[in-house]
Image 1 (tube, one colour):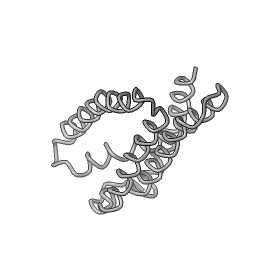
Image 2 (image 1 turned 180 degrees about the vertical axis):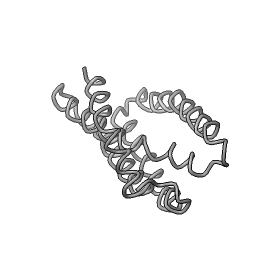
Image 3 (image 1 turned 60 degrees about the vertical axis):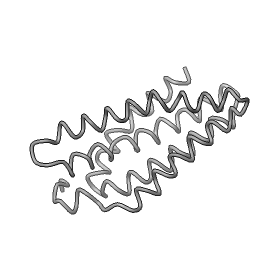
Length: 148
């Protein structure tokens, strides 16, 4: 049920996030989504009751729904003409690798008895990604690919 709440709230926010990306830009939406995802991820390690985990999971679904839209859009913006699909596919493949390696590494941290630390480390990695996002330019507006 906890994972379902996250998936359902994610589903409800992705269309809204897509509109945000087109209206205000890829970069601000990405930073917002990453920071919210970092907070939600770290919060998983702080709560242990069913109700609190349901709330955190709903918040994470919203945050990850917002965070998931800008990166592949930015990759498509930056890809050479005609290679957008290949570029986004490569991006997704790299993400899939992260979905395999990340839980193994965080699980190893949790296995040491530092359960909440594993979630905090995951949140910190998301904050680093948000910081990195501050250093790059806005792709859609620069390239004129943002719809009005």
